[in-house]
Image (cartoon, rainbow over all chains, first blue to last red; front, side, top):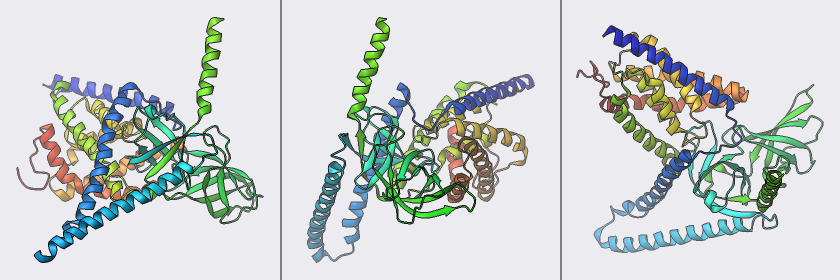
Length: 292
Length: 178
């Protein structure tokens, strides 16, 4: 018995050390830039995401049910039918209003960026990241809808983030509120450059902006187009705080994003048609190299 | 100590199913209710349970598998949670003689204490990775409500997990004699 336990302990130590070593190695290689999924991960995410999607759908239906029917249970019998009728009409009206609002939102989204030449894929948010350290959203569109890794994600109000992880039918967006997301940005009025990083649940910060740049509160911050991910001129947010050190060469700026992330429902993924061209060019180059 | 992994496969599969259900609630249901700034980290609760109650040389593998499934719902990946989980389990193994879950209060307090260890390990890893102390402070303010919620869930959750893992205890997790 004792020999068995000692063997178990040896196994345990060996496995602990082995798994720790693999984890540390994998962690050292992990970069929070983008995540290429394996076929298994692709399959698992595609399997679990519809469940997340259906939870959101059921929550909306239940909420409507309680709002429009259960609240009327205490009404008198005589009024019950009328109230039921009114409730149904209100429910219908509510649904029409929701459809009208959705319509308006979607129209704005589709009209937005019509001049940029990007192919637009409209998507709904179905879930948030399981860890509150990361500000990541999951959408119901993926590779099969034409989305690519690192495609920019926007709404008519401004920049949301970019595609970090992609499966056939779903995608994860790393938002501009996440500290792992960095956007090369410029202040619209002064044209001064800096890097915008996620900071908290509702704020981002702009770093490496020269201390001599005369930025003021309320200045609009836009994407600069550098960095090969975001197109130029997307609205990021407005400056809400400026910190200048007496002897520092840079200033740190706090930005309130132009998007209210807490009420975000739909987004537009911008897919660059140039990517296809680039892919063809790479393919042609590869083929030429292969022929040589 | 059950030394063969086949003894644990069924329990592990059931635990994965429970983890997935909780992850779906955390990532889809709570945000739909308006809770968007806090996520309830049920993966931590499950890993802590394994450390507290399951006697097996394969704990590290179980933690890896659970964290791998957790990574389908988070871009965090499986590595950080696996490292934190194994360290926590090593700490627990040294303190095992001192830990007795004789009442719900003690279960809550012990769970809270080990979540603090988890927070410290994760913060250290994140700091090494990102080099931003401001993020750790921000994380701490989210950690408080999230960890307290998890600690209050622990007594009932551990009873459920006891059944799944076939762990017999001298005292019930809720304090009553079994």
